Length: 611
Image 1 (cartoon, rainbow, N blue to C red):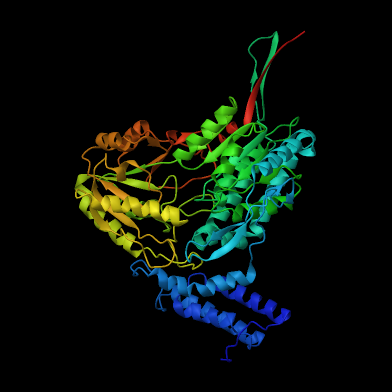
Image 2 (cartoon, one colour; image 1 turned 90 degrees about the horizontal axis):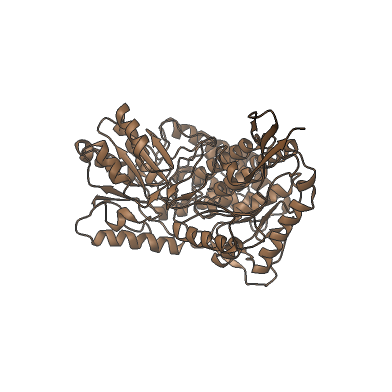
């Protein structure tokens, strides 16, 4: 093998060749061991190698991957493989990170207003975004002032009232524009995944989020020329019908856990139906999006993609900032509706700010303390896989992974994460052994290592909140720590997957949303009626899960569980055609499904006398 050299003095052509080879190697690696990473490290510093030698290394890496899939390589992550210390993963992931950095860069870090990347008026000091895996800065973001919010709302209003989007665009044109956005996302899938990983999302899961987001955009594109009203043939002297029209200018405020679909995810869940909803006389809504201040990068990339399509300027605007900016947007009198996804505490503030302006449309998808019930007749192995995935992070669950599904608890940072577990008394101890073993095998690591199943939590504040809840439970003598309960490693915001048992229904761990990788196993139940009653004791009502092969138990739970989404013999699978939203303090209104259009349209009734 050629001597490895420093790459700092490479000329442009050599750098381009190096980047191309690194990219090919990264794509060939997929799942990596330390040996594979060493090969990629060699590529990244292989300035002295010929192109043929670089290609040979990439091919060798591919051969090692084949061996890994056949069980011939050591150090991989198998079903019974040991947990790996995240400090090791952080070091070995350097090759992955360097390869990605050779291909990508943070290109957009300013607000997008009226089709232009703007310098915020107030000239505030840019805010440094930090990678939660390493504590290193990844980008400086220019946050908005309240004046910038006013500009964004004005641009959205002008695009609706005076631009072609609001005066002449047809439903077919909107459908085509949404497909253009989906195509742009597909073309930039790797970069979007990389941007998501900078905020702690394991890159393999991030790629699936991008696929799900693309599917969501295409789904709502199909509604763009099919927004329908009703016709009533009730009286020969009258013509009676309803018309659905766009609500107007929408303020969309999203949380950090899934920026695009629920990171990129949440934005797309709102933007796609908002832009699809309209009719022939008033084209569609316009939007002002405020992503979470910790995770704006993928949303800014989405804004760039939209700006490269036929969508007129001003239709989509993105503003940046923290709580003050979110409050100003929620209370802005120039909006016609507000849609928010995040905590119940902030949701109350958003609702209050929205109501202070006067009655107007508002949808809220808020927190949850979601129960999973496992009955004695359930398939315990499948249920154990699903519970661990629902509480902690990504595990492939019996073929349920699909581009239109969300199957990761995102390190427990998921509004519908399964955080309360109710087990039938007869299977309690055996099931505890299963989930303890599975949790111990989860791989914590750098989000840009494709082997990683759980990354860090999003920032220091979230880390401190989670550890405070864990330590509070550890001090309770009635609660038993089964596994986890500590920080993992010394770098980044890694929290061990944590399981507590013998948790009383009224204990703080069973009542409050932790929003982290913590599962509270409640005391066992003896009947489905008892389990459902206890599951309903929460003030939240976002989601619930049931594992059973008994038809009566399934029917009883379906009828009596007070939750907006009920999963039976699966969990966290969210097809785009199914409406998603909660009850009680988990909010109101729906994302996804045709019902999402209800939040972005108003219904006009017409009752006309015939001559």
